[in-house]
Image 1 (cartoon, rainbow, N blue to C red):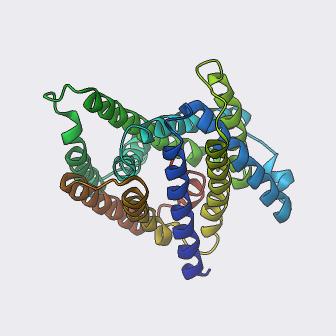
Image 2 (spheres, rainbow, N blue to C red; image 1 turned 90 degrees about the vertical axis):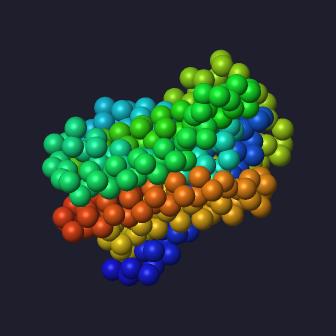
Length: 307
C-alpha cells in the first residue's frame, strides 16, 4: 500500500475526466451526444487494450464469465454517459458536476432497494442533507416563471444530469454484483466495447462529419478518458477505497477553474452553497461506510463520472 501514490493517481484521474468533459462540452454544438459517446468509447478502448497488453492481462480482459451482466452494465453506463454529454451542451460545467454528485447519494438508496443492504439513520440523514443541497442547486433552474427558450433548455439539461445520476447509481449497484464473477480489466474493456457498439445505433439520428478541430477534440477526449479510467482503476491498488473516495469531489474544483477560464462560466451563490452541502453529505457517507467496513473499492474502480 502507498496511500500518497493512490491519492495522486485518483486526483490526476479526476483532473483528466474534467478536461475530457470540457472537450465534450466544447464540441457539443457541433456533434450530437451519440457521436460524442462513440469517439469517447472507441479511443478509450484503444488505450485500455494497450494497457491490458502491457500488463499481460489481455486474456483476462477478454474473458467474460457473466456475459449478460456486461451487456446490462454497458447499456446502463452508456445511457448515463449519453445523458451527461447532452447536458454538457446545455448547462455550465460546474453545474453539471455539482448535480452529478447526486449519484453517490442515490447509490445508498438503491443498495438498500436492490442489494438488501441495511441503511440506518446516519446514512439516510446524510442522503437527506445531500438532497437538500441538490435542490438548492436545482431551484433556480426549475422555477415555473421562466418561459424563455434558454430557461427551457437549461431545465432539460437539469433533467438529463439527474437522469444520468440515476443510471450511474444503477451502474454502481450492477458492478457490485459483476465484480463477484469477473475481473476489473474485463469490466473496463467490455464497457468501452459495448458503449462503442451502442453509440452506433444513434448513427441515423443526426451524426455529422466533424471539422478537423472538432474531430481532434473528440479523439483527445477519448484518449484522455481511457488514460483516466486506467489511473482510476490503478489507484485502488495503492490505497483503500475509503482513503481515495473523498477525492472524487476534487472534480468540483477542476470544473470551477475550467468553466471560468475556458467557458467564462461564473458560478452562482446557490450553486456553490448547494454543491458544498452535497459534498459534505457525500463525505459523511464515505466516512460511515469506512466505519462499517463496507468493501466497495472494486466497484468504484469501474465507474467513471459518466457511468
